[in-house]
Length: 424
Ligand SMILES: Cc1ncc(COP(=O)(O)O)c(C=O)c1O
Image (cartoon, rainbow, N blue to C red; front, side, top):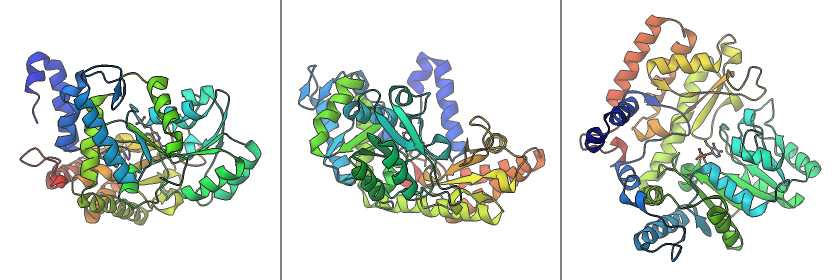
């Protein structure tokens, strides 16, 4: 890994890039939506395709010189079809948010109704938050998780849908640790004559590897981000049946975007290729095993987990029972000081605010890429517990920082050849 060319041309940017590389090597990335892509994905993403305009789709471009852009996009599409078993795939959305926008633009009119999970219960801005275009263009009502169990209450969702008569129901979440019953949501959508969008942004990799139920072929539309658990180039993806293919493609381009980010699509193709290898299944299973181990150990230390545990890559810790005077913000900042990078998060029934919420969210995709197993995740849980117990104790934090340093050295991000340690 070197930024020699950047350093020569622009030392200030080179400093920032090198700083970021070191930051990633020397800290534990536990933001549940993050991962470390392979060198091959990084290289593809920084390729000369960044220079190419390729408006349109393979074989039908508005510009000349697209033969290699076509090759790359076709490879990404074929591999996505194989990975998720999708009938039609669009790999052009610039991000998961743009993928959702593609579905809304294709299927809804302004003023139509969206029924989605409340942001503070684990939903996402692009599911209809007032600060997002989706909340501004459409009429939105939101469902919640069961306050007692922390699970989606599918009966309550069905009753809400009967009453609200939405045009689309959104499932798939940002901070929901349990397996989603996509089939049940589709039944509700069918009963009320709504479309169903399953947004698997976070769990694309778990679904591809078969460690989470797949909505593909079940939900009308499936969207995702491509840089989270699936560990490919940065961006988004939409999957649907052939009957919606033309509408979706037109909504992505020219409807909502201009020229596709062909370099990112190259990164998607490479990452999808890696995920088709048998090794990826082992990785995805380990991600979930690690999250379970992390969560169970935190519970042993007295922490409460929303829903009592996890079936996925993340745990959502509600600090109110165990640490009523410690907000998620205080926990996030103290943990960052020792090299554990995760995020504060609202919890169902939030009593503080979005900026200073009562929970933290911790994910295992990036740690697992570094080679962490259950035992290593238990060690991380021990450190997290000690720091949150004493967020102002400099002695505790300096010991914790040393332990993080040891873990980073034990599980280096890149090996001597500059390859991700887990990617051989
Ligand atoms: C459920 C869900 N949908 C969509 C997104 C948006 O993805 P992106 O950041 O790629 O726009 C996220 C991001 O974390 C998410 O959690």
